[in-house]
Length: 491
Image 1 (spheres, one colour):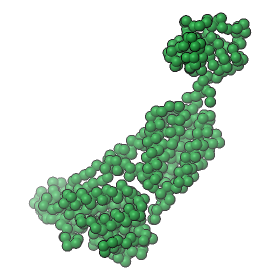
Image 2 (cartoon, helix red, strand yellow; image 1 turned 90 degrees about the horizontal axis):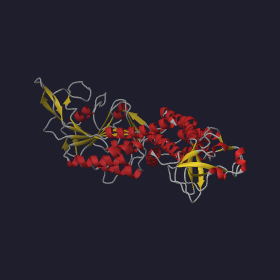
Image 3 (cartoon, helix red, strand yellow; image 1 turned 45 degrees about the vertical axis):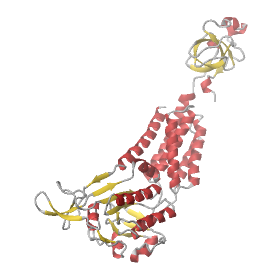
Image 4 (tube, one colour; image 1 turned 180 degrees about the vertical axis):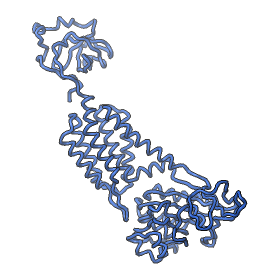
């Protein structure tokens, strides 16, 4: 039972971790960490010098951080960011992107590309913040319609597929790189050489948001020249370049939670945890916290799998695995069906998702170890232990029970359940002497595996009078003197 409690706490920690991560990720920041723009060859970090302040007379620049696969939540957040930038008077909106592709429909992505192309506020796209950043699939076409595009050195873009056709004269333009980007990917250096980027940057690329904001200074978009940097005086009296106020934003709490749920490892683990907890709750014969948490995990997993390119037959394998586990759980011993369940979980885990262009959707080995190993441990050790503890009671001889006293678990009128000798038994009493829950009862006879009882005092007939001549030799009414089974052990 303790092992099952640990498994339950593990499920709770996963759900709590998701909520906590969403809360942290959903925090909006309006700050100016990039206020000082260094001159010369400096390409340092994201923090400016102490005591510096943003150029107060410049319009701010908004930054929306987009990480993970593009889904409906991400698309809606970009729409909202464009509206907010227009409403708040921002001179530009920068999308900081690191994405392996899209799980939104082609129609939804086409509408987003059109929205970025027609945006009344200039939009820049920066692939970062690290050299491992990627922008693959249809979301990469956003770089073909954005006003300013740049990359971190080491990052890659590509696998755009067929470029969408837009109305109103707008086109997705990648210069000479369009053919290579359609089914392949380009590094920063190749993209810069082939004219896929719309910002002239040095060989090191644009390593930070600070540099991206500075590089946009002087760029002309639809007749408007961006003014993101101005000269100022630092604390020592020297002249330095100061950037405008940069306002960072991310997804909100609920949106970030649902976006996280629709990720490859989280949806997979939530499904296994949810199904295991529901099975655990089924065999505990009640509705408790495990059932509530299991239902919540299964619901969230269903949402995530519906958004992701999950194979329906692979999900069915995971569900069938739980049914196979249930066969052995009810007998309390891991046997053949437990092995079948482990094989089904392994097979379903390895082929759960279909790949996206340029992005393998396979589950990472660490996630597989947690999912398959945790499931195997639960159903080989934890669940059988819980079942034996919950349902198993000792087999005992019954003849000695006549004359023993116990307690009514519930009302016995005329049938009910009593506890005698630390075991639960089905019981029956005379209709004329109903017994209330918690009252003391006395066993007067045994009929099969049912105890005939009466109140400790005031019974319809003294138990000694009800015992036949054979009772002295251990014979009981309606049964032999063999071993009996308490009610809790019946299956």
